[in-house]
Each structure stands twice: as C-alpha cells, then as structure tokens.
Image 1 (cartoon, rainbow, N blue to C red):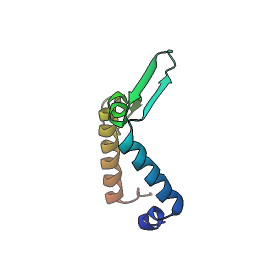
Image 2: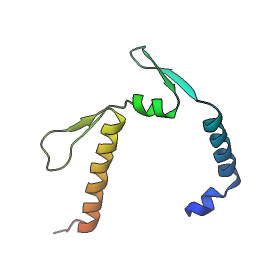
Image 3: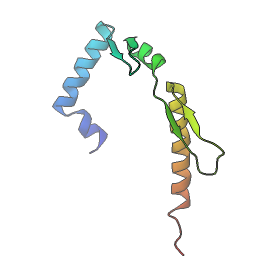
Length: 98
C-alpha cells in the first residue's frame, strides 16, 4: 500500500485527529511497574523518550566484542549500524555460491 493511500483511510484519519487533539490539549501520562517492582512514570512523550530503557546486545560481524546499550540514544546508534550494514550488504549483492 502506498503511503498516501494509507493516510487517507477513514480509520487512520480518525486516529490522527484524535492523537493530534490529545497531544495539543494535554500531556499524556503513563506509568508501569518494572520486573524489579520499581515504577516508571512518563509525563508526556518527551519525558518517555528521555526515560526510554530497553537493554540489548548484538554482535557486528567482523567486530571485536558485542555492541550493547539500553537508552534511546544507544538504540538509535545500534539501528544506524544495522542500517549501514544492510545497505552495504545490498550493494554487494547476494552471497556467491561455489
């Protein structure tokens, strides 16, 4: 489906209107309990981004050691590494078979 066709669907338009209203008229608050029983509370989207925490670890082929992180910035950097590696792989074409 093309982006423009998706964006004009009635359900999508309704959601965009609703979210726009929520974000401009109030500050959404959300909270949850972590496995260690501590609570995390977000006061708005920017606060949620700043408190983002999702631990990860992966190995980049040819690199020494694992790449690890847990913050939004760490995840953004990891996704950039993945994207760069994917584009390099696409540029080289499929693996050769012997």
